[in-house]
Amino acid sequence: MGQTSSAEGRGTSKPVPPQAHRVTASLLISNARTACDEDLLAREGVTLCVNVTRQQPFPGLQQVQGIRVPVFDDPAEDLYKYFEQCSDAIEEAVRSGGKCLVYCKNGRSRSAAICTAYLMRHQKLPLQDAFETVKAARPVAEPNAGFWSQLQRYEEDLKISKQSDLLNKGLNSL
Image 1 (tube, one colour):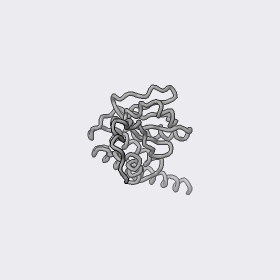
Image 2 (cartoon, one colour; image 1 turned 120 degrees about the horizontal axis):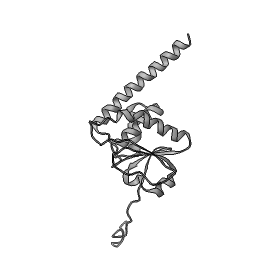
Image 3 (cartoon, helix red, strand yellow; image 1 turned 90 degrees about the horizontal axis):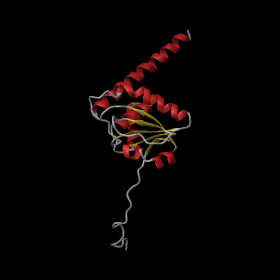
Image 4 (cartoon, helix red, strand yellow; image 1 turned 90 degrees about the vertical axis):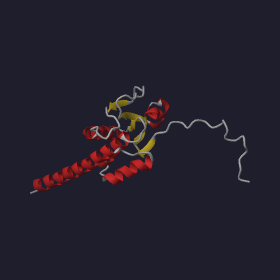
């Protein structure tokens, strides 16, 4: 009772198909191998790929636009300078009814940082909530220490920008 036959599961298991992890309804995160699965991209309706690597390939689909963020998974790399460009491109794809897939080699550090920055900028989430949303979608997500400190700085810069906007609105209503 409760046991399986000895033949079951031996040599019959199929490889796990590539899977993109859903951060939001329109934002997916994965590794590079999954990102090049054209069937998966078509099935998911992906219209934009953000490739956060220097050398990993782009998928070969005509209907999928691509942005390359040429950084290594190295804490000394400056990923911060790409946060706004990537976040705005993702938001544009989402607003036009598309979906975005963000990926790096392993789908762990660089792609997680870009997804987190997007959630902070366009979903107005604080860093911790944004990262927890990404981590819930892709449990292996873990930006390296350098990228994490850049996300902390980005959170501060977004707060300053928001306070400045509020101050300007207040002054304009005088």
